[in-house]
Image: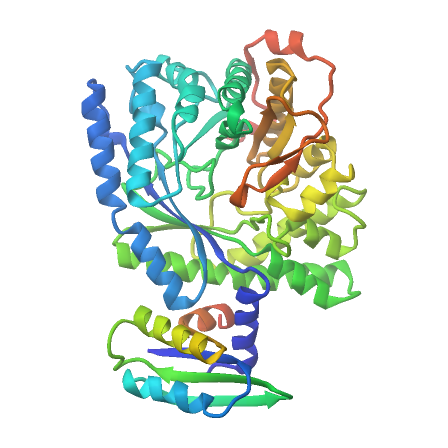
Length: 452
Length: 89
């Protein structure tokens, strides 16, 4: 028999604390769409995506209604496009990007991920062509997201690829300057990228994945923040227990939705991603969780320790709630998408340096950070290289999604709209790593990659 | 299969009757009701059997929500599985 208390708790989590399913993402393999003729390839890609995902949106809408839990996004991830177009030119790749965009639009899906490459050890001709095309592809499409993996603990850090990505980010920022350089919000540079991540902009369908799969990303920072606030002055061990219990409940909803979507769509369930993904809505912030733990402001001394506790407790609670956990699974710290982070960055309490330290203990990296438009590509490459080094050495995923906003300066506010939120432009060091970046080559894999 | 209907809002005459009427119209059997009024605030949790529901569950959810809007109440209807999965191991 259901307990009244439990019913009220669930309803309260949804209505008052912004508990939701952040995304139901269908992964679709495009390997069998490969070929020599670009128009034929585009035709096959469009047909495959629109047939496999034809019922994704209506089914997600139905599940949302059945369980009374909002599902914020329905999305699609595909095989890294560089793998299906080895012989194509950058212009050809742009045609594929437009095809992906059209398929997503026709299905009513707001983002489609996988316009990317895995080049941690080196790149092929086709991968170079795709990377070159990214700025133009993102400037000429609305829904396509791009991610490039440039480092891994096993392979080391591909500095040549980082150099290219610095140029890609600068070029994208320039090409989309009329729209607050928004193109850069759709590019992620990764180390140790997970192949089953359902969250954009970094989602893609890994090569070891089945033909199609359903991955679900949960959310719920507001629920965790409220649980901590209710706990009052308890010790940190008790706090960790509270986070674990809350994460368990949140993840169970994700597991339920994943199982239901999988059975209704006839597609295998992949993973549930346990991430605490904030939104700009007040009360749905990871920064507020840290502040409820006892920090004056997110970014002050102690922030990294609080985040480490949170991230670990979320995983411990979530793991038992789902039969298959994957993706990024941890706490996200996207500055523009988190009301508390926005406030902390505005007041100067949260700096790029502190964020970098925080990325060593949480699930992603420097995420949705607006910087002035004038830093050189070398500076951006330096930021990426630092972040990749953290990921490679700690054997975890790290990523960089910075937005060099052309025409904006430190302190200006940028509004990206919707779930992307708004961000104050944060200062970046003016000192140059140019000579280091110009060396190119690869930073070798760390010794702890040699485990065999 | 069961669903949970929760009704909250300002107290008035006939709230339970209206909700029960809609349930009966859709062949939804009421199994349990827990209800209280604190000051002027009405709160009710109703457990119902939806095995013989007429029409789709989605439409029933919409009907109940609409009924709530008409009566100035917030009515939410959710499948019991969400509560079971969150609160049972």
